[in-house]
Amino acid sequence: MHIIQILWDRRDFFLTCLLEHIRISLTAAVCAGVIGILTGILISRHKRAAGIVLGIINVVYTIPSISLLGLLIPLTGIGDKTAVIALTVYGLLPIVRNTYTGLTNVDASILEVSEGLGTNQRQIMTRIRIPMALPVIISGFRNMVVMIIAMSGIASFIGAGGLGAAIYRGITTYNMTLTAAGSILIAVFALLSDWMLSKAERMVNRRYGIE
View 1 (cartoon, rainbow, N blue to C red):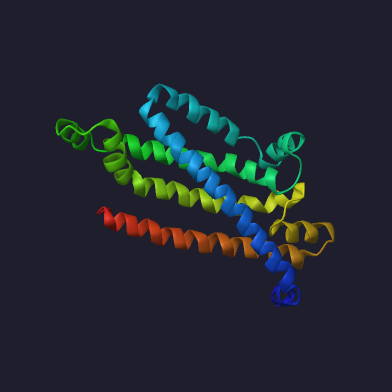
View 2: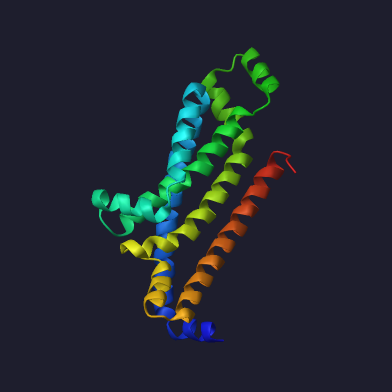
C-alpha cells in the first residue's frame, strides 16, 4: 500500500523518470543493435576475426558496470551520454554472438544449392543467411533489451536520468519505499518489453516454420 501511495503522490516525478528511462534504454538498444548486427555480419564473413572480436567483447563484458562508467567519465563526462555509451557496450555481446551464430549455422546444403544457381555472396547474405538467422538474431536482441533496461538503473550514479534516480534518492534519504517503487517500475518495464519482443520472436518463428 505504501508503494502504491508513493507512486500516486509522486506520479509526475515517476512519469518523468520513466520517460527518461525509456529514452536512455531505447537509444542504447538501437545503437547496440545496429553496431552488433553489423559486427556479427562482418565477422561471419571473416571467421579469423570472429574469435578476436568475440574475445574482446567478452573481456569488456566482465568489467563491472559501475567501473566502466567510472572509466568513461574522464572521456565523456557525466550524464546521459556516458550512460548510453556504457549500456551500448554491454549490449553488444548478446547481439553480436547471436548474429554470428545465426549466420554461420545456416544449412550448408541450402547455401550450396544457391551458389549452384549462380547467386552471389551479397545475395546469399541478404536473401538467405539473414532471413534464416533472423529468429536467432531477434532472440539476442530480446535478451539485450531486457539487460539494458535493468542496467539503466545505475545511470543515476553518474548524473543521468531514469528510474535509477528514484532508487538513488531513496537510498540516500533512507526511503526504502521510494527505492522499492523505482525498482518495481524498472522490473515491470523490463517484463513488458520482454513480452512484446517475445511476440515478435514468435511471429518470426512461425514465418519460418520454427517451433
